[in-house]
Image 1 (cartoon, each protein chain N blue to C red):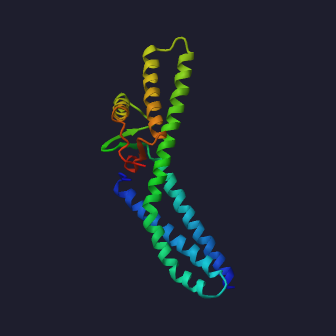
Image 2 (tube, helix red, strand yellow):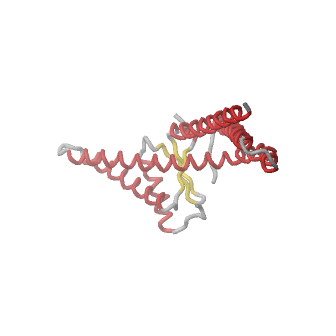
Image 3 (tube, each protein chain N blue to C red):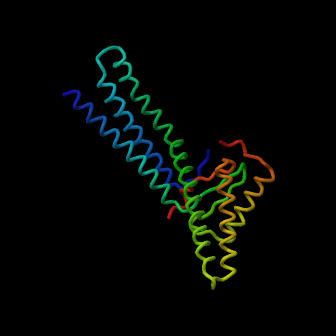
Length: 75
Length: 132
């Protein structure tokens, strides 16, 4: 009997963890805006609807990165 | 790693953390309860809530990692879409040269960004405040 209760607890706990993960992934996938960072520079763009100004921001950020060769100490 | 989130997203994160923490506590307690009776079982059962609190505390980090992976995927899929659209437009003889140029700019920018992302020089993360 105790084993059955433990197995039920195990399954319920796994369902709770998986549902939290699925909720987090779907919340992230739903987001249209992404934030791109390099050191102290940060731009926010709507990746599904890129405008001229967004492209210019990306170019600036990337060229700044290439010129400085600085990874900002991340990752 | 820092993330920009709106108020409702913060609530979602803390709700997710609570559910994941409680779930992991239940999983661990159930697993430890299945062990043979003895010293280790009792100690692990007592420690199960501590592990659950650890999972709750680490949930923000897990969420940031998920945001990071999703942002990378979004940039790469947008690049693929733009490349395909550019190829389609180029195949059309009557295509507007301005449109071709615009698409080419978009593909160039996204390509550079994808390269920087793959070398991990630039960090992209889903901004939950910009949800649809």
